[in-house]
Image (tube, rainbow, N blue to C red; front, side, top):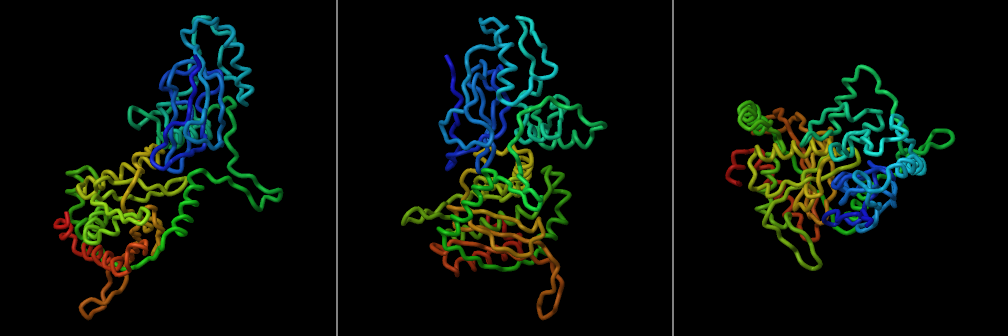
Length: 422
């Protein structure tokens, strides 16, 4: 009995996706649990596997097509390894099926396989390679069998492929023709312009940003923070902290703790609007904006008020690695009660961050820069950072927003009080 491969549940608020890379082609033998295709959502790539073993007889949706939950992606027929059918017929049909799909047969595949033999895979198992790493390998002509994986359970990541390319002594041998990826750009006749199709994530980011500005009364207030005390703590404690916890003491853990302290004092910034109701949240799931190749993603620190400085730094480092590898899960991005974004890592001196709906507050951090300030009647040079708070004026008053930033400033400039704030 044939088995349909359908678009699975994609996570909270995600109902559509775009078909990404097919790792199997029509006529290929598949095993139960083997990854068949990746789906691009507005948050992360989702891998869809085969529920049963058999032969991938038909692909219904191809790369670049938009799909919804429950749509049929492909059909798997019983057969393949251990099938009762004579092997000569599938062997004869397979090249034709591949040619119909736009793929040439593998150059080193035997023309007439022995009746008792199954076709050996030409690449590393799909489940052992992240979608981003596989795309990069395909584009660079890298044989994934030659790449050592450093991810969980030996999974090959984007960084592994990059290291393999950097250490290659000679160009990789030419690969058999594969289905051409969706064109990234279409140049005009004179080459002065090109048309690039937006990825699903970029389209969703664009839509959500416009919706945020159209549905919320967004205002931004600013302040500046003297970073001297935090810099001093980091310099004095950096070596012992890293030796004890195995992770560097960064700035973000201080700001996460300071934001939580301010949220406890001004709880409406840790809320959301549902109809005519205000939902106040007595937990602190802090979103951390991280730049990714296809757009910003916001993984969430769950119950961040219960995390230590080391826990926060370790989790942020883990998220950054997963963003680079393309291995973030939908669960990592779900929810969030308040967001912190750090434009300072890109050199931003000042900006107005946009809300991440349905949240009503977002804290923007910026570049630390030495500036002259007046202190106790004298002009001194201090490492200063501008901070910005964008908020939904429908439920947060300007006075609350200003006091929130003042509280963040107080906690950062006197970091010992962060211990008292929990």
